[in-house]
Image: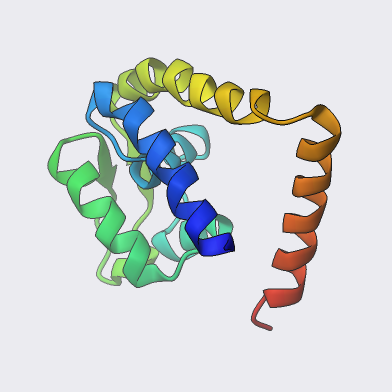
Length: 131
């Protein structure tokens, strides 16, 4: 049920962001890089809770589109990531779409249910963390 719900919610965010040509997974990466530039791929993967392979797959189209660039380093894991000007502009255009999807999701539930869902998701996450 959790996976089905996650797919449904992700689809809603993907639909909202399609107006600017992004998927929710790409927006999360781009927005995080724009907010905390200079992170390595390894550090960004850790902060987003992704493995490096998944992050690299999500980064590829963002780099190809010219929205993210990386510093030169012999070790790919040590490359620092930066949002380009067009990447920061895209985040600015996408942010209201993300918020609208977020508001629609939250608005479909009572405040107390949203808080309880958040609490339960935090609990589930803490119990499934790989040590």
